Image (cartoon, rainbow, N blue to C red; front, side):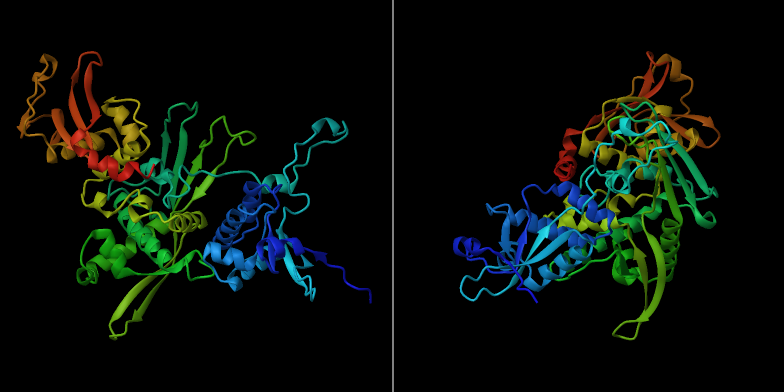
Length: 493
């Protein structure tokens, strides 16, 4: 047999004290493309996080090559753990290894692991002019499809996609008695020609009901805490988790653990988890004109999938229940990234259980709408007619339901110092005065605020008649006395 020739990398040993094994992240490597390929090839989130950390650690080395030992110290991982993830990538052809030596005396062999983009995986511009006239169609190579970027997150470090608050909650049931199995909404967005189309559809008619989201918020809070405890110790973090129901209910409903074990809470929680799991959101026309080759993507999104309910005995032989839940891979990846970036819980949570404390579904939706605007500063329009506000906050509701429930929210938070100046056009419509609010009754038993002022979720709300519009309007401005709410969330945006 011929002698195996190995590369000699003595200079790395002399210059840095590096000994094999080594990792090489060539300067020419396109990290963004590399990570996209990792995702396309179903590489686990934890392996992607490790390779990202390795790439960053190597940037301090002129040659872009470093030893396992050096990297382990820089990213606070064991050498064996680093080897484990590199072998995974090697099996996916995302790493090539070869024998080298860093030992000028004994010339002991070691390995160097080089990050590579597999041959043929780069996205090349198609030269359609070279296609013969005889071709009836043009092929699109699989690597082009694999690297299409459908990244849809406003903030990669936030576990909860802003899409959920901005879009999905508006396609949830707001009426407990509603038996609909589907809801269709079209959301008008500034700067877009087409409205975003969302259809929520349920298996077996169990469409998600907006207050069910308190259990989703509780589940995500539990998941953040769980991943925070495990992310530094575990080699891999999957997508399926077993959530004990009592802590979940306690977080969702802001009650004690002893109260959470009551049968009523337990049954309600299970039904809510089933509805969340059974609902899929179809989203169309989400992409605008600025996404290059992508003209549109029809997305099918689930908040999570409930896989099983487990009854077990704890250490005191007391019967308990747990839910086995599979979260979307993107949700888990975002939490891992946020935990690794040492984000605080407040920085990761866009919604939490306190917003679901009310039984008024429109107040919940308004609270989410207000938080989104506080974070993003998106409120360009500051005055709405009733129907314009309904379309922006709760398009799945009827106008009469929206006006009634929004009015109830204003009444609950009415400004005691407010003094209405009633326009002559409206005077005859006023049938009741509650606190400082003046109300009409368009239908029997359905009171609507015609004049009123309230502060809710960091916004000062004014309702009154506008001669320019010829109708009632709702005006908003940020309440300076509620800046603590803004400062609490603005740091996240």
